[in-house]
Image (tube, one colour):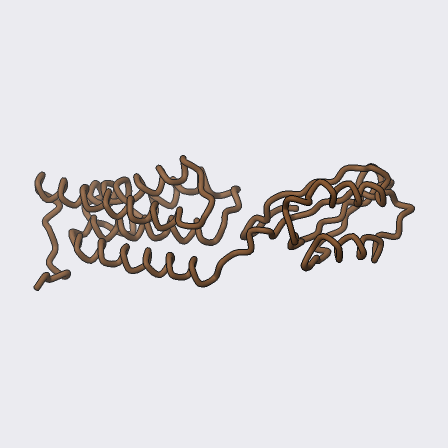
Length: 220
């Protein structure tokens, strides 16, 4: 039986390259599971693949001092992630890749692979169970200050959406315009143009935009 608590000596050349290989495998697993039913960029996938390898090498270079290694990697991560809001799932994938790299750096490669596979499997199962509605969208409508927008678009929403919710209202153009932010669930995406045309007849042909709904924290 495989003893997952048997550590490889990463201070030898052979041990280092074995751990490096398994860190790369963990990164590939993390990238594949993170991309399952999730919109991710090519650069993010590559970053997930390389992150365990980088973390593993950093920890080895600081002679196994995990505290120092985490501090160094934390400083590096601030450069890229401090001001960029991300989806919770993507953030979890980053922590998964870093944890796999840390585990490989200590020589417990079997534990690293098993851990990555288990978390990846949980991610896939959760993605299959909690299926996101692909018709969920973000609607932004600009209206003149003279328009009482509460209830003004209800009949249009009833015709084209399964549900709608006003999330935010803010003024624009020195208070002469209002910008409305809705989360909507479209009945049929193929009727998006008709939906926008009907809204334009109510808002004075001002700006309207519809975007894919973004998970996580977003600055509206």
